[in-house]
Image 1 (tube, one colour):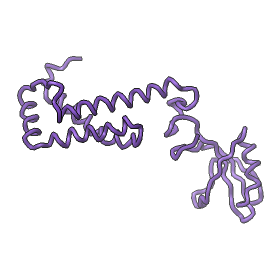
Image 2 (spheres, helix red, strand yellow; image 1 turned 90 degrees about the vertical axis):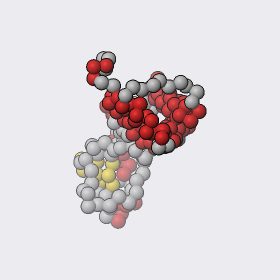
Image 3 (tube, one colour; image 1 turned 180 degrees about the vertical axis):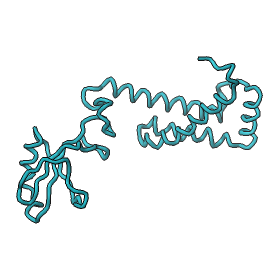
Image 4 (spheres, helix red, strand yellow; image 1 turned 30 degrees about the vertical axis):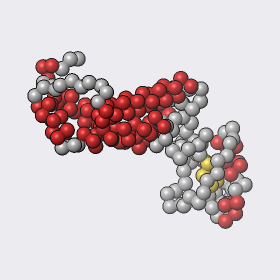
Length: 187
């Protein structure tokens, strides 16, 4: 199945208006893409033969024939193929997405409902947390956690959810690294 992020391989064939097949990676950049057609063929040469019947060639046009990368959305073939025979990988991705969403929705709701007791932070960390609560900035932080987790749980607009949660993760990590002296770090 094709999606908007499906990339083309660099190998290919070019069929010109004289119906000559040229081995080449792609058409020159000065040409305009006027449309595309997906054709299922066993080989690249078979697809090039099919392209010789394209009506665009009658008007001096050029047809570029290139195969698609097969694999995960984003088409990075080094990560393997999630779509074919990768049921385990699909389960791992779905489970990771749901767990991340649940973690953030629970801790986001905890910021408003206080159903999980929180530990007291010593020194500067306590002052920082106090400033966040005194300024009511905690509303933005916890609301951002909830808003970012909902797309993950609904499996809709997942990139948006990850975009919202990314800065939250960086801030959580930065807070915990900077709030403890290096002598107390455990590796």
